[in-house]
Structures are given as structure tokens and as C-alpha cells.
Length: 144
Image 1 (cartoon, helix red, strand yellow):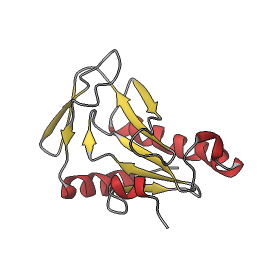
Image 2 (cartoon, one colour; image 1 turned 90 degrees about the vertical axis):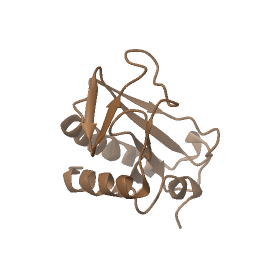
Image 3 (tube, rainbow, N blue to C red; image 1 turned 120 degrees about the horizontal axis):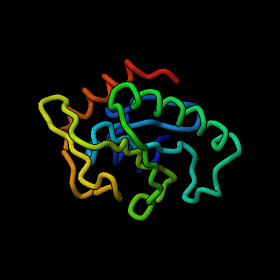
């Protein structure tokens, strides 16, 4: 069974990749182009509550994410934000960071906070169809 956090971020339609313990999803609200959500599949609401297997498998997920975003977004930095205030399941918001703009699917994406803190309120809201299409495009490029 999938947790509520994964479903909130559009699972299964936004699925980019899956490892033994993690789901990689397109974030429908894109503060920067290529924003993802990395959701643990375990029933855990504290980072310390993850199994050793989930911690080990996190490396596989992160390697895949960074390879994907390096080639599709050409980020200069990457931020992993573990906020868990509204959605309590263990998850990270993954934000590729860059100066300037990125264009995709008729949208222009800027990193409003560059080079400082990310500005989550400044985002491009993808439609369900756009998020699903971006997830499919990213899934085809996944190399974990």
C-alpha cells in the first residue's frame, strides 16, 4: 500500500522511478524545473524510524536523481528539503538549483531564490497531464 504523501504528489501518475524503499515522483508544483519528491515507502513518520535497508537504498535513489537532473536540467546545486510539516511520511523535496531560466513544455522556469534559499511559493503549477508527461519523460531517462 502506498502512503498518503505519495498519493498527494500524484502517485502513480507522477512516478519517475522506484527502488526497493523509495519512490521518485515529479513534484506537480515546480519551484524550479525538475523538482521531484523522494518518498519512502516504509510506514515511518520520523527519519530515525527508517530501516537500515531504507537508509542504504537512499544512496541508490539519490544517485539516480542526480544523474537524471544533471543531464535534463543542468543544475549547479541541488537541495534536498525534508519538511514533513503537512505530510508526515518521510520524504524529501528535491530542487535542482540554477541561475537563469529553463524552458520545457511551453513553460519558463526560473529559480526565484537563486543563489539563496529556494522560494517554494514561486512555482509553475503543472496540470495533471503535464506532470504525468514530465514523469514519463524523466522515467525514460532514468539511469539508477
